[in-house]
Amino acid sequence: MRRLLIIACMTIVSCVGRTGGGARIIATERFSGLYAGLLEIGQTGKLAGWDSTRVRQAVDSLLVHEGVTRDEYRTTVAWLNDDLSRWRAVAERTERILEERAGGMKRR
Image (cartoon, rainbow, N blue to C red; front, side, top):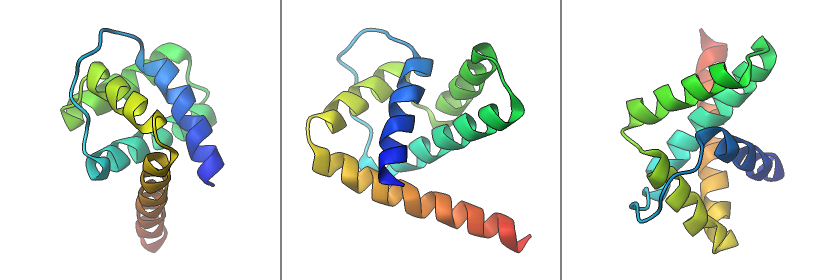
């Protein structure tokens, strides 16, 4: 599961796009929630057969909803890439978030 999370992150990064640097780092707890949302978008898009434009629109919408810029996302990913233990913490928290969300969906 953790390996899948890391691979998915790299895929999502390519969808978010590239802009300048110098943005703030998103708190790990907040980033984990954002990351869970990005993974859900990736899965939904794959199952629905979305094209790259539709995936990008969904990613942009999530970033706006969360109040996060592309620069902040990219800066945070770069910061996480500097230390594997940081990614491990994000992956573990993201996994719990996804499990909670899936559990809530099963109960309905």
